[in-house]
Image (cartoon, rainbow, N blue to C red; front, side, top):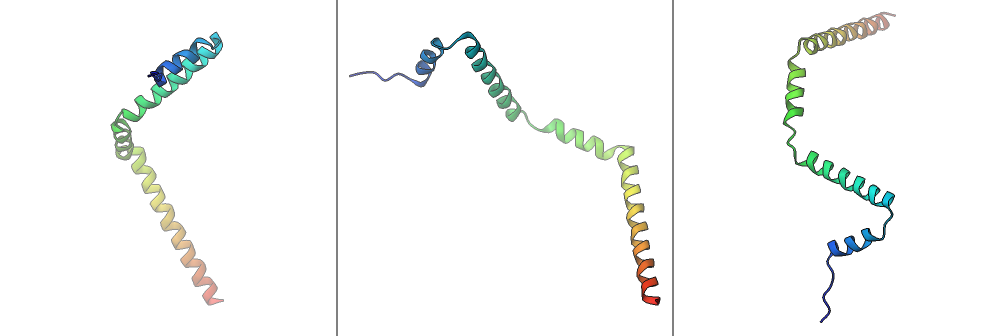
Amino acid sequence: MARRITERQRLALKLEHLTDTEVHEVLDYISIMESMRRAASLPGTWEDELVSLLAESKENARAQQAFEWESVRRRAERKDALSLSARA
């Protein structure tokens, strides 16, 4: 009974026939795969901490206040424009 070769053995056979530059490209690809695997396995806690720090910062509070003022100003302008057009 013939023994089938595994995927790893098949890969090893293919690697033996590659040039040095092709082997380097394969190693680069493997490095990318490993870094993506590490990034996927790391919890996103540092992102959550960053978001919470930014949300608590003084500049964010100032930006929220400026946004609220701007929305109130625009609402008042629209209200004035509607009242002027109703009079005319």
